Length: 202
Image (tube, rainbow, N blue to C red; front, top):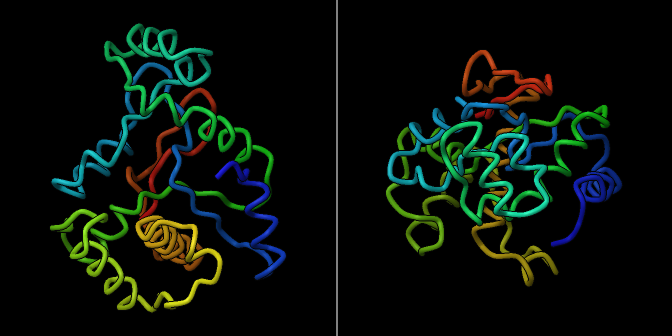
């Protein structure tokens, strides 16, 4: 949307009050020479939805100014190249990377498909962009006490259905982290040279 994480947090705080936990579906904690265990464990939890978890590039690749340079940097570090789709997330990854070191709010990484699999007790059968998948995800949220209203105002006019469902799943994980009932993938979290806790919370 072009809106920064800080701007979103400010808007949410203005409307709802102090934020205890902010959950973000963006990699937090960038590896140096290896893949992240968080990504591997998340894929294992969601079965045939595993392709929705991108392999997080190494820091040198994320900070590279061009895609070819990023792909080369990742290959030199890990022996694997990265997709253009993964590199396209670079701006948001770097934004979040800087944000987590500056804010006093606890910021955690989540992955909606992992959240939904946890709610369901098993990987979901249907993708989130078809009717069956949308209906199942909405029912799972309702069962967890997160009933999405039919009228979301202007947000409902400009936001894709799957983005609304994913945001609600992230809120579910944030609530669990705040209550101390969430668990991490992996446990304990990894830490790379940036010193940032690297784990996906469920």
